[in-house]
Length: 224
Image (cartoon, rainbow, N blue to C red; front, top):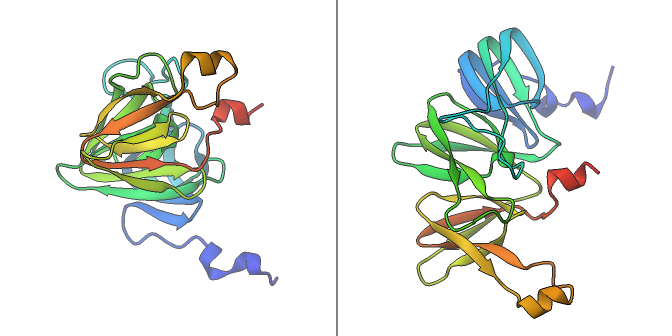
């Protein structure tokens, strides 16, 4: 049987070391020898002796589904084998954390991560109850984190002289040391007349960077 479908770049290769690698632009392969944490429902295939267990959404450091729906329900994958993760054919990227690194990521963009990383839910300071980025996940420690992004991400530097304003439905993540708040870019009168659709943005100040996706479509809206 012959087809471009069977091109070498599409074939799953035997793992050379435990941990995560990109299978392709849309999926991540994780060679499990112990445990990996991933978003519920993101497994698309696996082989080997693996057990999947739902993680609670309750207290402490667990990522929980926030009232805005932007939290993340996790599962634990334990054992020995290989597992492939993906989410709605979004682009996948692997971030390698070194000691001292800290990154805030929107829960909707987390795909999977090493259990050596520490994570906790943080309320975005100054964000009140408005916008999709009310609760985000702070990752620290050493290890790898795989994130997903609708389309190609935009990485925008943030400096003390040039704060960045981002639509709350488009933000993926940002440097953990940045200060956050909300910014209203149109007047009350303009909002009463119908507005521009861009009434409130997340503002980031300090020194670092912000990751933005080229889409404002929320998952809830896309499902309808």
